[in-house]
Amino acid sequence: MRKLGRMLAHDARHPATLAKRLLRKATSPLRLAALPGRIRRAPVLNLHRVDYTNLGDLKCGPYSYFDFLGGHPVVDINDLARWEGPADLGGKLIVVGGGGLLNSVFGRQWELITSDPSACLIVWGGGHNAHGSGRIDGYSHLDRCRLVGLRDYGQGHDWVPCVSCMEPGFDRPHPIRHEVVFFEGSHRPVRGVDPAIPKLTSRCMDLHRVLRFLGSGELVLTSSYHGAYWATLLGKRVVLIGVSSSKFFGMKHPPVHGTPSDWMSGGRSARVYPEALDECRGANRRFAAKVEEYVAAFSTASRAGELRLRYRRPRPC
Image (cartoon, rainbow, N blue to C red; front, side, top):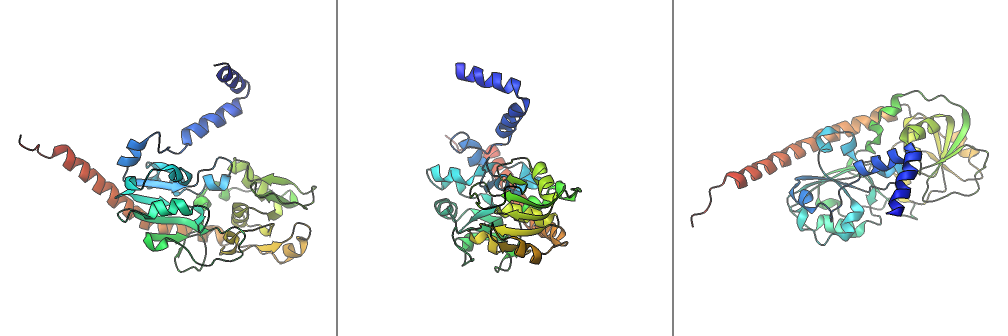
């Protein structure tokens, strides 16, 4: 009780902390152990990595931008590692993505997702993410999916980049204040970057602040996938430094690669992609139209099933 009292007293003195705590609670994904009933009854699930220390993971769920998915439960893919079995997935439509969920550390979760043939799987904005690899060498589990939209370009499926491009913040002006800024991926710190360069990490959970920061530089150095993606959408020249995953090698609008100590040569060859924002949004809208048809069909079938159960005649004694 004393610990709770100290926590409440601290929040009362720091309204921003209280707001963040309440926001996190209000938007937290459904925990399978806590609310199995709703998960079991839901015809449609949104499934991706919900990480409150990584802004890119939080912003890559299509349900945040398309209303036809917004009313359906959200499940953190890491929760599946604690799931006792795949039975609850039977007959469901599961929208997986976005994020670097393919050929990555989520192999166990994919085994559970794909083990029930009656589940209808859709990948929206998923991407290859083999750490320590500099190439995309094929995908596992996609043969079990009904629709596949990959954020990796030219891989034999619909190209559907991260849905965070739908954020209205990309339409706002961001005054340039620096020649170069550095946006660091928080899970893989980079050494050797000039400390005089303005820096922000992906642990910043305020997207508006991140976009203002990226927009403030003429050139963006980054070791973050979403840092590179968002800077490109803002019309910036981008140099990747310290990258170590296949996820950086499937971008349709590729940045250049450099080193922490010698990024200037890369900066001179980096280019701007003024068409990137419209292309990314158009690809997501076209894919959304396909997904919406599936969601409508599954929701209708679920309601019909509920009605049949509710109004079926009781068996004679």
